[in-house]
Length: 339
Image (cartoon, rainbow, N blue to C red):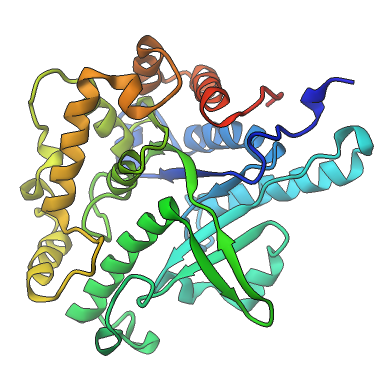
């Protein structure tokens, strides 16, 4: 019996971060739609959960069409059901979704939702206190959507802290069961993503890519499918020291919310480990320039330079999946499994 029917021991209990968001106009301009992103996402993650790798994904829980959280949950649930009916030959340990949710987003997660998906998902609530916000500055939950300066600032700070904690790991308290350790992500795959309209100091994919690179973990940028991932891929493929406008604070401050957050970052104290827009973009661009001279090495893809460049540009779903799998096989021990 082939050992490929069973989970890879090397990848067992490891956490792979997924960064994805849908920006309709950006994708339509490239002849792509929501279904292209959804197909790519599911083909990428299915072999991971079959080998007991869990997925770190900071998705929201509103039931709207472009919410990928429920796509991942349904996939994991289906894999669990298939596995339970498959007998000893297919007795895999199916990975789960680790949903990192920052204040105040997690206030929308009801006990009913959590109970419904408890076998597929662990929700990791990142509080204002987890983000390093002083007790005197914590905003009551009832005022989370007030629109006040402090509520807006604390939400952005907690969002940034959540993204950092995905890469460092954390311990969460479980009522009546003590605590549980959430491991750090060992690799990240980014695709799509919003370039404008971000709720934090900068686009999520930019900040998550920055933190992944700083923690020296593999980063797979699928730039051929539009969004912030395409902007990042294009910058990585440039030569010299040219800095794209999207990597400057001034470009993002055209968004009134980002401009407001920049002013609040001066007025209020930023907790340790949280950077405002300008500082974060400066740090990201330093790493982008470094990658231009050593693309595969800086991104730690486990691919050749030619393959890494192909991954950054291809719009072929099958080829993108093949390249990510090859890289993860090299870097975190992923075995080849049928899609």
